[in-house]
Image (cartoon, rainbow, N blue to C red; front, side, top):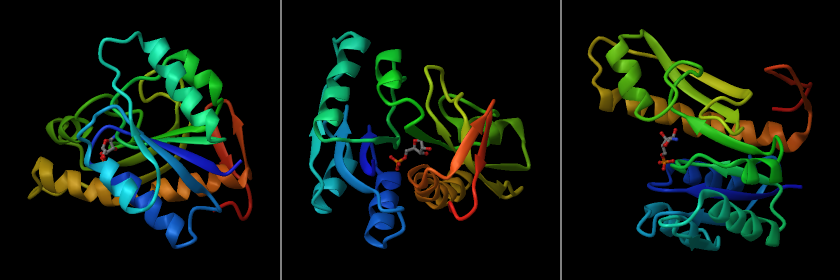
Length: 204
Ligand code: GRF
């Protein structure tokens, strides 16, 4: 099932990277069929529309998490979505959501997990003084930034960096590895052993 739904809350540069990869024939045959935002003013909504992809806003405020998630799941299922990509979607998914797409939800995180989970990962890494950080694409489970790691890319942290320059370097990595991880998932040429995601021949 190669129909993809992308969930966003903001800028949408990772969404753009996925759109660009699809256009270039580098998304493993994946097709982004819907974009959902929980923020009405998210610039990513416009990016989707520019690309001719239906984009909808669904407000989460004042709603129970499970009820909201069930609505998003219905939206996605109604469009036959098989893979969900979180791209700057600033909400934890409930078991209702995760169990609707087992091992078919990906997220991109701006650090080398399991280091620096949670918010402001680039700031956390910078403040900790690490010499290397990077980006991670992982399968989403019910816990924060904890699922099986599909792809990672490391970037150096230079003495001359500030949080902004580090963030930009990591973002470039995110844009490289997210389409790659989607390709691998869609190829179905992988297996999961414990915490390890093992990629088969010819998958990437
Ligand atoms: C990215 O840094 C991503 O890793 C994090 O949120 C940011 C989203 O950026 N989860 P964008 O909306 O894709 O530009």
